[in-house]
Image (cartoon, rainbow, N blue to C red):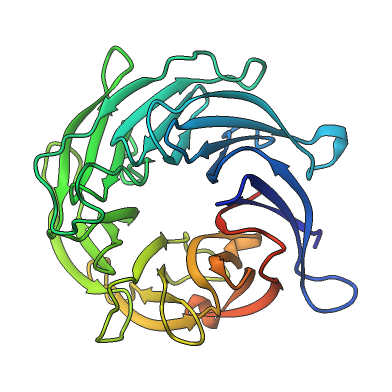
Length: 367
């Protein structure tokens, strides 16, 4: 197998390019730094163009939010990146991006806005300097006075259960809702419904399977489960359960990422993986693994893997049949690659880059 390339978003000023070789001639898998592309303050979220993966979009997470377009492949090598365009994000602290063929959809965390920009795969790459914006509704402050004084969109994702029309889902940590948006005849997005969550839950990210949607509640470290019929039918709550087995949860702990890889020949069973940040345990943060063997609406916590990472934030599956999981500690522990074992019920660390080689990793792309 040829080495795989991984791009790393961060809370530094750079995006990093790594090489992961799962089967080198020397024997053990290796993970190495290839290059570092300076982008700007905190390029914490990265996404690739759907038909041209050499074009990467980064959210520059600052008060006057910015989008940077990075072109890879200069000189024929993947690791060389060059910033080829910049534009306003239409708000403060862009933390999530969704890319279509001709549109970039942005979630601005601190300003509580969704914004869109027209894009192209050739120069000038971003076709307007004035993003269209939509403010998320906000009725009242949440119980968490540090995090819920206003709307905080934390993800923009198309509804994976709706195959006939595009519906945009926006988890809003501040409002304790996942907003449901549809595109109108004028090409603009409009709110047409929502999923309600427990006060103070702080929805962060969602995944879906069959007729069910799973929402990671960042502030209460819970996995919330709903039936999710097409609009206009409302969702129905199934259950919610903690993303870790410990009975005592420190106030500083928060959940970060949720993943649901599609079953395949090597991993025919369905599992949900969530990361938990800032665990005071000496072996670091955990990745919780839930089985759906009992049914879509009945996830069961079947494993907790200690990562040795501090503030395990983003993580992404990659490689053949999503065999590998890359994850990093934004506050310590470096970047690690795990291999799925026991049919997906477990994770085994197989490669690592020490802390300091990559600064404060927050997100990943398998290139």
